[in-house]
Image (tube, rainbow, N blue to C red; front, side, top):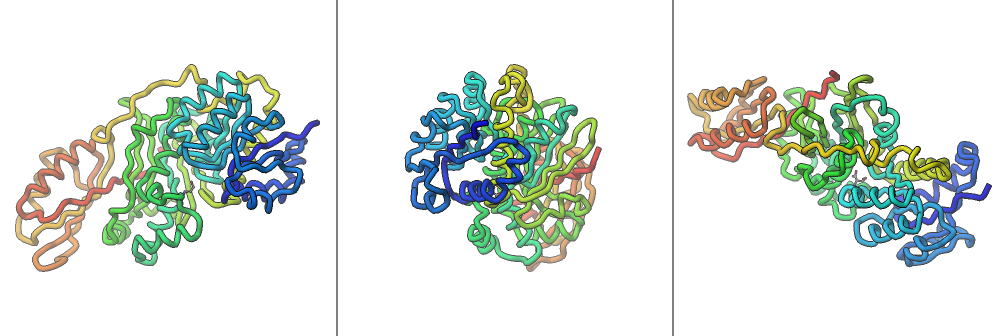
Length: 437
Ligand code: HSE
């Protein structure tokens, strides 16, 4: 049988890892697939790097068009990233009838609806396991392993850089900037690390997860994004004292009113397994109606783990290359014609519980005023502690609420901030119990 011919775009960290993996594990992959995989074409801005990793049998160019237009390429593996060259190359490759494997979450989150529609028309596969949580086979789990279930919610630590920073801030009391620099040096952060710390990277991944879970088009433009930059050391420590841990979570939940789609720092009980996921590791917890809660844990970034997902997709495409396109697993888990445009809920309409830190004058009656405001909005208090006098006559009051609509808590916060004895903006962090249902 003829080998499957791969055209590789981009030989950066993940591209290099993919070449390496295909060499190291060639024998095992061959035994699994029963067919040879060969990198026949490569495009990389610096051809010297590609030449140093490949032998003379591979055609190497600095122009992606030489790969996407080559007749003797079956699968185009896009590992360039971004939405300029990568988008044009993927679209041209699909038009040329090539199957696509990509690790590009931004491309699919922003242009996936268009790309999948074109791919369906051309009868080609577009695989993207490496785009979400690196080496964790979460796309496989959502599209295939859980296909018998109604998925109810997904919550994940899906940005390793933020998780690394939050873990270091908690364990070592490290400063934010210094920890981010370390994550960049270790090669975990995005080219533009604001994507990690401001939530876009997690938002890209969550938007894809949500579509896979609930069978909707991709709605990255409606995903709420709040990063970790504004988190204060004392909130991390207070959360710890109260039995919680702060994680940057991507949460998507199907409710009768619509779909919640949100990325933000979240207090979760320390007792949950996912709360123990530290450093750059990722974890995704899925709540489904038949199997209950399942949890997927592993490396969310790095050359070898991401290459593991890329090559698993290449193997899948190689196996299905001669199959009837109508019998393949749908791009977004559900048949394209049966995707439902379920509304995405505005943040005012999500339901959550909340951590509030209020800086107030340490005077008689202030607690009563705060409690009255919460009571008047029917917000029930789960816990309330006063953290003593911080400076001069100022005390910090930490309140954990029971579940309420976000619009309601915002109204209560605004009333509290209007109290003359509340002397600074109130810190609000959402909380999730994440218990198995
Ligand atoms: N910058 C990403 C992260 C890499 O930190 O998780 C994987 O998408």
